[in-house]
Each structure stands twice: as C-alpha cells, then as structure tokens.
Image 1 (cartoon, rainbow, N blue to C red):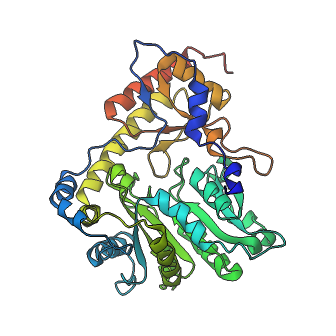
Image 2: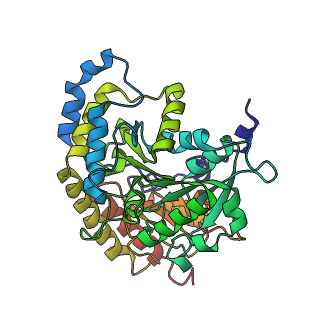
Length: 407
C-alpha cells in the first residue's frame, strides 16, 4: 500500500467521536449539533424539480469537461459576482465542473505537485492553520510536505504571508488559501491576494483559493473578494497561477448534490482536465442541469443569507455577554475562545447540555510552537433559527453556572 497513508491524521470527527464516547447527555434535552458544516436551510425547490425532470440524462455518459451550458452558466456567475471582464473566462479553457470542492481540492494537489522537483529539500504545500484537513491529506498523498501558516487573533485570524521567508517560498509548489476562512470566517483582502499573486510570479507556485463560503456574508455592500477578482484588477486577466474552487453546497444549500467548479489559469485547467479524465469523476448529467438552475438564480442565495444574518444576530446577543466571541467577516461559523481547554469545554457541554461543538485543536497543528486552534471551538450555525437560539441559551446557562470557576 501507499506508505503515505500511514502519515494521515484521523479526521476531526473521528477524534470528536472518541471525545464523546461513554458520555450520556441529559436525556431531557434534545441533541443540537453545531459541529458539522452541513447547511440545513431548505434547498431551492426549482433546482430539485430540474433534478427530477432531467433524470433521463443518466442514459448517456457525462463528459468530464461538463456541458458547454453548465460552463457558460458558471462563467456568467463568476463575471457577475466578481465583476470580471466580459471577455475573460473562455468556457473551453478556464472552467471545469467538479463533484463538490472537497474532491477537487484533494485531486488538485495530486495533479499539480512535481514529486521530482526540490529533491534535496522536498516540495511544500502551504496551507492555513487552522485548516480544512483535506489540504493536509492532499499534500501528503501527493508526495509533498505540508507547511502551516498560522492565523491567530493577533492578525485578526488572517494569514501573514509576508512573515513567510524566501526559503519556504522557493520550496512551495502550491498554496491553499481559504477565504472566507474555515473555521475563522476571516476574509483575505484584495491587497493581500495581489501581494500573494506577485509572490507566486516571483517564485513560480500555484494559488488554490477555496472560496466555498464566499456567498455567506453580512454586509451586502461589501461581499468577500475572490482571487480571480484580485487578479483581474491587477491586469492578470489570464489568471496565471490562480485557481478558485466554488460549490453549491453552502451557496445554495445543496450539499448532497456534490456540485461545484474549478476556474482559472488555462494551462493549469488543461492539465487538471487530463488528470480528471483518468480519475473518472465526471458530474452526472442531471446534476449538471440542476446546477445550471442554481448558478443562474441569485434570489435564493439572498434569502438564505438573510436567515444566516438573523441567526448570527440572535445567537451573539445571547452568548456574547458570557463568551469571548465576535461576528466573523463571513461564513457560517463562530470561532469563540474557551475559558478552559477546548476539549474539556466540548466534552462538558455535551454531557450537560447535549450540544456538540468541535474543539479547535482538532482543526489545527502545532506550528511555530503554538497550536492556534487550542482554546477555541467551532460552532456551525447551520440548523434552524429555533435550534440555534435554543443552543445559545443552553450555552449561556452552561457558562453562567460556572462564573468564578473559570476565572
């Protein structure tokens, strides 16, 4: 077997299951899960109807490249959302549909990493810390070493790219960025992205921007910037070394559809298409037609965003007097600090209030002598307003009964 499989860490939810093992929570309280980032808002009905109506499409093998209609729909959405030049994004060269961002983020490293380069020191894949664990696994199984750049409260949970030395950039073949961030919700600025694009040009590496939370934000006048937007504004309308990953899972509350796309540098897309042709990962035909309906409509996204805004306002009003927490820039996670070890906090909260949250240390590694996830928890506000409000009241009571204990 591939020996690198033994280097993979247990997934965060495996660790969480072990943490909760043997604990019987209060049976009078219904369980509320704030641990998994799985949207629970109602999916758009018109997309589900198209999914059923287009079932006949399964009679044909789908193309790995996807239909021209789907790629055109994606290109139109990217131009509208990120104000890209109308003559950019050739649907034959710059866009590939994928089965959700998770599989694409993993597969991308397998196709892009040159195992034979930097043989003296080894190739690096840079990634945020805390992070989405797929980045780490992708790097390891591609034959590279993960390099973690910390995002902490001291930098408003944003990466400090300028703190990375040139020796590291020389070994870097690929950098994952996540904006809005999982789990912090921090949004990387256009200026930071442009600095990174210049650095990629200088040291010849690829930027993979995970933007699957980009449509959940709180200020309608200030949506999160995207990597292609930053590139276009600096004249890089070929999007050299820039690749973005988007999904309908969070944007359209369709996690089970497994539909997203990758877009950017035409040369990179051509190489990735070649890999995917062998990978056997073409999106089902009826999923492609349903995806077109989702990308073409914006009202359901606006409506969903309003629900998230109400949940965040309600939950923060309840728990902010007793917890070190603030509204994130975007996304649907809260990233509060805990008054005790995050694992102890999560374990006790589950035992007493039947609420599951994810300890922050499960989402990070020790780098530069710190684990930036320690003494944080990730709370996904994906359930209904009623459930998230109830969870907030339970957490507030949990902390109030301990006033003085944690001081």
